[in-house]
Image (cartoon, rainbow, N blue to C red; front, side):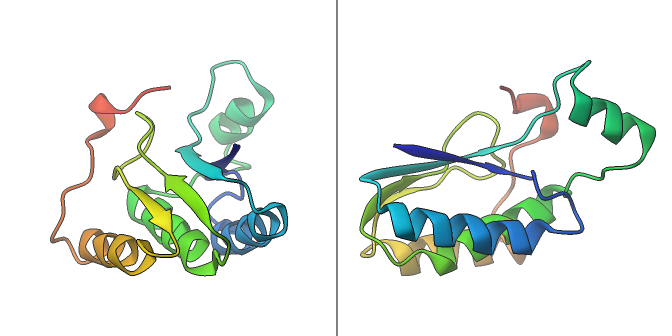
Length: 124
């Protein structure tokens, strides 16, 4: 299994982070790949950077764009899941077969046709 963290590239490098993460997963070709959305832990160095304004996390739609970019770049056979409590939109499927369906769900969320999980319901 290989987990990835959405948001670690910050808002500025979100899509770059997604592409690099997908490339790494493609090289590893794990049987199971999971995405979680980064949630700052109070007192951690990155949480301090966020509080100090030197690091900006992607907003919910930017996070969905990052997931979409990551998924679009996956070429390996893997069981993909993005259904952790930290994620804004739960997704699960076996790739490559489910890729088009998952991308369509992400596009629906970006278009406002699918609701995102409210912040109060997200967790570690």
